[in-house]
Length: 240
Length: 335
Image (cartoon, rainbow over the protein chains, first blue to last red):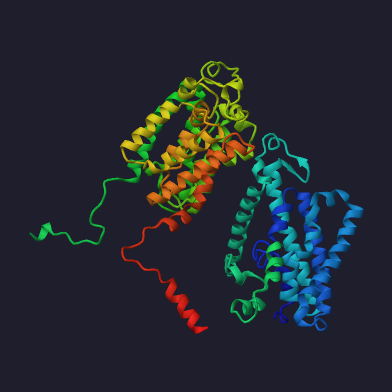
């Protein structure tokens, strides 16, 4: 689909214009859950980026081998193996981070950014482009998490990367590190990035139901009633 | 003759009621409770109220200016929001926290959704809940009225609601530290500034009811539901019911906050459903929840349900026939 684009464009689109969290609205669950502190957000962003790049490379290399009917299970196997590797590394070298991320680390398997990029990009494009796409998306994801967690940690805990800030740490607004504050900061950041994208002539991101879903192309057949409703696919997407 | 015939587009009959007039009525009805708050909690109550109202009006003016919309501070709704928010705060709250509350109420809850008449939840209650979740310690620092409020070293004490949470099976006499029922009625107990004096609140509510600013459907179904629930929970102990009705923010919530035009149903049946829902949620939180008081949460939760309640209770036009059956038959015939 985008083979003529330069590699730099593939990389940079993930940062603002197609930012996975703030523009494509993917991977909301880990975004909201791990941005209570800058440290865990950066850990989550890095872990997901590594998995994203590796799985994009492997899936892109195997794209002509994988039969299209079973591609989703095949993608999941690839992604899950990389997640296992990353999880073992994190457990071995930074046990604190593993404790902070908890269940969200293994849940990268069903993170819809990774599956979404596999489906939308890596499954159709050459290896190098897929790697660059994964890297860009990973940087965009990490940057979004870093921004969100900075706002939440500074206002909600009065600290930054664990270092407490004088004055602010006396009476932090706890709500920012609670779930409602997460949604609030998320919405505001989306508004800001929408504005940025609009100024470059891109449409604003909106919750468009099925259209926003990376599975839209294949799922349309289900909506039209040609095939039985895709319960499993739906579950995967909404879980992440 | 020709001059007497005015040709104009509808509406032709206009009510003399205006938003400003209604808001002015609400402000008048809140004055007795404000006076009592100042008597009980001293000049600090007045100062805190001034901060809330001032910040609310200022942030409304600024928000409209920034959004390049026509200015609406003249309709006094920001004043009402500020007043009601102040009534929901303890008198000891630092001024800057109250100011944050006002900004949240006006900018985030009201103006970001389009200003007066557009917000989907009550601004003052949302601000109170956000403050409660943000500064739990400061928002639960209640001082006892009268005896200590005028002296610099005020005594903090539990609200009757916190004490009532320890009551089991409706036996009120078993717990210590509860004020008498007369004290409850007059407001001689710990609590938010505006919620303590039930008599003053009822006087204001009566004014609003007589002026027909609010309809009795919501407050009465709200309070009635709480009364019935507490009657069963307290094993028909009437004084337990009385404490539950007079304590906490029930009167303030039922008469002044649940009746907000924007966030309550338009239909009469809808209003009754809304009130019953508020009452049920309040009772459940009071009886089983970890928080001593649930009026604000019940109102905000029912606010969110208002569109659905309205859809359920819309009156059907005379002679209206459901189309569903025909469609189903057609589909069956097709298949």
